[in-house]
Image (cartoon, rainbow, N blue to C red):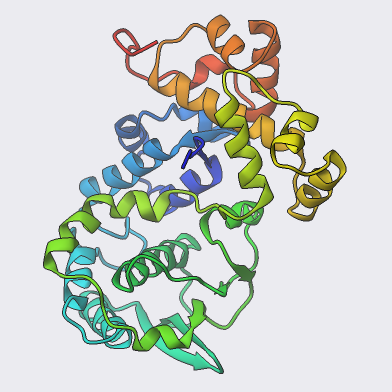
Length: 341
């Protein structure tokens, strides 16, 4: 299946850096490790590639020796999440595996308890602060929920459909991008942060072992941070069609015909998903441009034609409108000489 390129809003970079910034630690070394130009932090509409975001996470973990990036009262030493995953291997059921993960996590830190709760036909994995009066960055539950969900889904065989994600804080300013990270119903200002799924999963047997653990760990960070998009949504169908048709760029009518629906139906279904054909097309071109600028030395004139623009000037205007920055800002910090065209 074609997977169109995706990028991460700069708001998530700010969230990831929040703890080190609060401690007065200079950000330059982390950004340099990830190849992120510091100027992007000043533009609210700028974005980074998934690979840059993962490299930023790795840099923070390695330099701070903390799997939780300085977000808690004391460091969660590197390898702690691996230990949590290994503790669940061999559990007879998913419910027992979750209890083992929670117990291991409790041994490693003092700030958060992981609990399994029930609500009718749903089971929840929830986070409880040992000091309810303490103020923790929103990125702490955001990261923990993503890690726990992905780990539990892997233990269950790779799939765990989440019915709802709860957050014990008000919607952040970047909440409109949450659907990329948390594919499910979202609820804010809840008593605890957590996620809910069909309780019948708890009795499923754990389908992983030590041999499969190595493969999981090699891709774990990408699985956690790769934006999650519904493959059933009409918007996903449109993005895949546009990608397949490259180097041509289909218009609305041609796309609707390819999807065997009328233009009016396509517009109506996209509107129900909160988007439009133009927004989807521009977001794909934006993401392709960011990835190409970051990973190649392609001239702007050639990139403009590749993305369906008449000339470099029109592309540069559109790109600045999309990201707040000129295309040149997205070139990697190190010399691009030797990068593929």
